[in-house]
Image 1 (cartoon, helix red, strand yellow):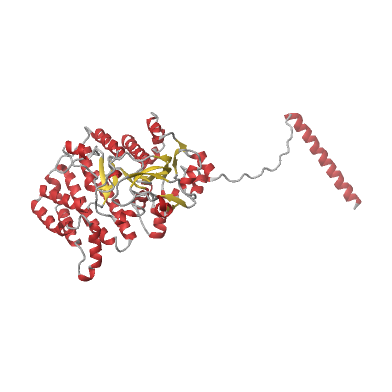
Image 2 (cartoon, rainbow, N blue to C red):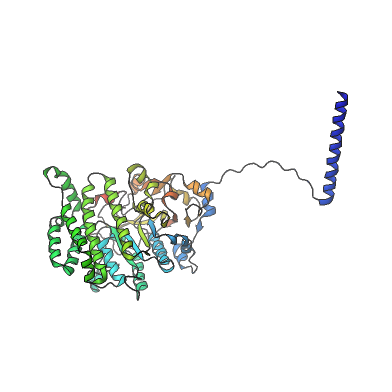
Length: 507
């Protein structure tokens, strides 16, 4: 046992001596001192605010950003140009910065990336009158720009977008874009090269019926008489279409089911004679408008009946109509067409990532585009923290300039405000957004939606919904403080109430 201990001691001493000599030799060669480090303390993960500060792309006040010759704020979205459908949304229908940025990005995408369609959350007949103006279309039908009533009368034009809410499209921001578009289209082939302006919504049942009859008067007077007869009874309800829907509900037991068969007959007659009508004149452009008006009447008749059965069904009918209208426009403009959609965030963001889809089984244009076009459909939303907004206090009321309350705690807008960065853009797509930041933003939070009515006294109930932002939108533009749109007028003449447009407060 003693011999074993002595042997082990000898081996240990020898090894120590060897290591010591090696160490001295190593030091003599490198002259590098040996340092002993303590184990570092793990750093806590960065907060969402810190991550935002590190990864957003700030920009100065919007007029300065748009005046920058480099156009950094617009070039930031160059990679979005791969989309066949680019949806650009606003979180209110009365905010100047949202409209001005959207118009500027649309101009940029037209100039540099070949988009040839601008499709808006607006009535088809009014939008078609703008399209006739900006593309200098031949043929019958009114032409219009965004201008005051007095200016329109002096120019011999019908004013456009006169129903509530007028300021939604009758504003300086839209006027400037429409006039730019007319200049851009000058000298371009009306059908192949010029950029078109279209409406997607379905609230023009009466004016669309009259437009169908007017078109048929030009191409087939006998068919115009048939359409006039088919539409005659429904036209009596055109000023109060929600009353028509109510009547079909309360009188269904008495055998009144509405006039669906009549409006379908008009559409079938037009489609049956499509080739004949398209050959008559105007290279198919006027037929496309007439067909769309006839489809709108059919969908609107169904919509006004459905609104009294279930809110989600009427919302879904409306957004499905908008999506199908968009698809028909894309088909009409050819296989290489690319569209930019202007609508509220509640329409262009993916409903599957919001309370709309989770609790109400509602779909929207954004979801339908994602399902149809996959990565070729991208959505950019504008968000704001506080400022001023053009809105009404009640449906059909005059426009007011109202103060927007600071965003609520636990909202995305409050999170962005807390960065201290006044304006920024952010790409939310996987592989484009910092992974840690995107994961932080995947936490469900409140998001604000202001339509054409603003009710600050019931802010939380009226204007907020839960969302998962990176799954709802592909990119955002954030403004800490905003101003109201430059409305052409504030007075709103009385018009029919559209009950379903009031959730949440006129989207």
